Picture 1 (cartoon, rainbow, N blue to C red):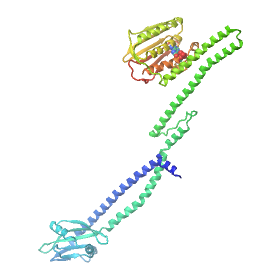
Picture 2: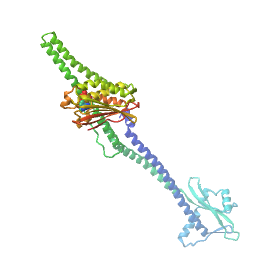
Picture 3: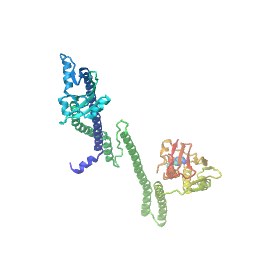
Picture 4: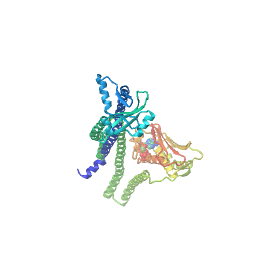
Length: 490
Ligand code: ADP
């Protein structure tokens, strides 16, 4: 393993997670060990003090001091008492405080008599004093000192000190520490290993997510990662990732569809154009016939130009290259102007134009785009309304927005087609629609213009009865983003 791969592993999330587990565990182990060691030595100390307290009680019962001499009053046949006396005598110091030592056992001698200041203090206060002292060779002793009065009339106080070696307690604590220090690295190593396994398991979905993301290409956008059913953050991440893939796939499919539609739309007039020109070239008897063929061809060129121009405008609009020129405008005047332009086509189609407009309707909109939106809706309404029908345009203020309605008594839109009518090149496949010229781009513009103003479009339609498009626009500019989704209803 070279330096680079080691660096890659140590930088990885798995390593860092496992290392955090191990570090946390080591800290916890240290704290637990320290607490346990402290409580162990405290409880050992306490029990040693209890033993010394008991021995002090026995000492008071078994030792008499009379006229500067010690007498042990005990039954020499009682092995237990004899043993107790012998044990007390091993570490015993008795003094009168004036420099006369009544007893100084061999072990106590190795410690040396207690400091005179302490002796004076204990004799003066007649209290109990605990101390830890050490022999020259490092043996520690816990000593309990107090006062005993002589049994003669003088009732003289004597300084008495007994003790116990601390070695056993110290050894127990040391053994615990040694055992603990020996086991801790093993435990930490075990936690490192388990942490590595656990981190690997926990990161498995992330790894498969990364692998899945790596496998994605234009041809397999349908790839989804199954959730684990744990409803945790990782499942949430997977759901979000799948959602993103869903949206990507939809957009990708739309782009593919769009490219196919564009090529189809352009191919039809191009093929017609080519056919006409070829036939004219081969069969036209004279210049007049050639002229006629060229004029006919110009129609197709015009249609091609329209498609390309409309597509370009739509692309510019959708990529934010068209900036709305908003200014206060009287929409009533705008609608009247557009209605006038449509009077002739409506008359030709024998469709009655009706209007319901307020005296004045001021709003901050891009007038050109607003008029274009109304033109598209009106031209559709007239196109898809049979002779004798009626188209009604109404404009009204509703709170802080305006409502523009174009309603017709035409062929209507089938329910299943409603969600698609705003899609580029979409045209309902019916004979009534096929009869009419159209690029299938008009409503895409309507939708873009409404959204760019911060408004939205609603459509209600009943096949055979008519259609109503309602556009809602805010009265004043409030940002260019779409505020709400367009709704379609049958
Ligand atoms: P175009 O009118 O050029 O075909 P549009 O984008 O304006 O394209 O409209 C898309 C389709 O929606 C139309 O082809 C038609 O099928 C349907 N449509 C639009 N407006 C109406 C209407 N007022 N009545 C019935 N169908 C309509």
